[in-house]
Amino acid sequence: RMCSQLIFTGFLLLLITGIGQAQKAPAGYPQADYEQGRTDAQNDIKSGVLAYEFAGLPAPTDDEEIRLFRERYHIELRRVAGDEIRIEAISHMVGYNEIALPEIEHRFGKDILQKVADEAKANYEKQHTP
Image: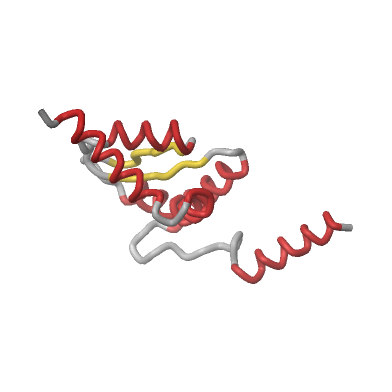
């Protein structure tokens, strides 16, 4: 009885919040890549994988951030674009992170990305300051 109530409550939550329904990609982003990103994130979470996709040129603190997220939080950071940015990759990233980030923040706090970035920067500065 309790299990069926939980399933029913979960189903109602999905209907009310719109989770699981098709979402429209932001203007200018390819819809198919955006939807695939959302699907990939949902599948990763279901299989126990937490990840966050990002784009941009490498920064000196990247290795430390990647290490902290992986070792402390078991979160994969995935660079999807560097100096060459494809709109399809960015569209996937936007869709992916719309699903993944709320799950990450639910588990570790709303400020987790900034907290780790700040710690990585401090660690880097300690190692590279005479």
